[in-house]
Length: 208
Image 1 (cartoon, rainbow, N blue to C red):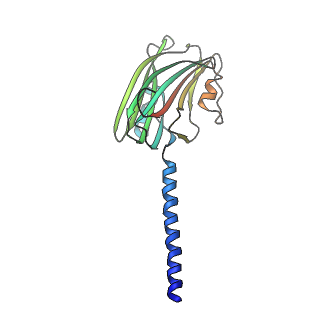
Image 2: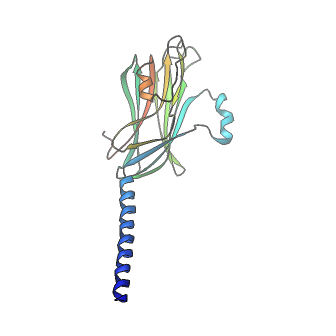
Image 3: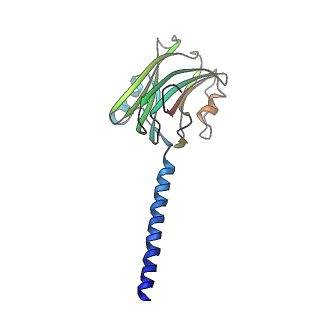
């Protein structure tokens, strides 16, 4: 009888152990396809002292992902009067299901202050010490506008099936735009006169 009780107890313990393993495995599987996005800084450490000397507007986010997608991509939306006017410069980097790195963007006037009609835009995707980048020229807002960056107010978790706004530059006529941490990048783009929005997405190919 005592031996039967011991076997029964062992069976219960074994069942609980296997259930725990299944729970952990299910949890790990449930995290697949989730993109984790965190605010970061374009200038870090000793390089921060250079920021005011380079005349660059820009931003950076850290991204972690594990799933089945083969590419990480970025795209630019230019907004005017609350609506998307154009989508520019789709750019992709091969990842084969895993990414733990950063996406950064910078904008710099193409001409002298108060005379430039365009920005030189650079997007960079970096991971494990390597990087790829893309450059394009985009039309600039009027030099009479007041402007400022709109960054993520906190971390985000999204699925790998959606494009996510990670940084923006907002400009308005006359007065400085008001900012709220409760307002998303896209929500702010809808209410200002001009906006640059950088989006990040994951895909199986480069034709999305």
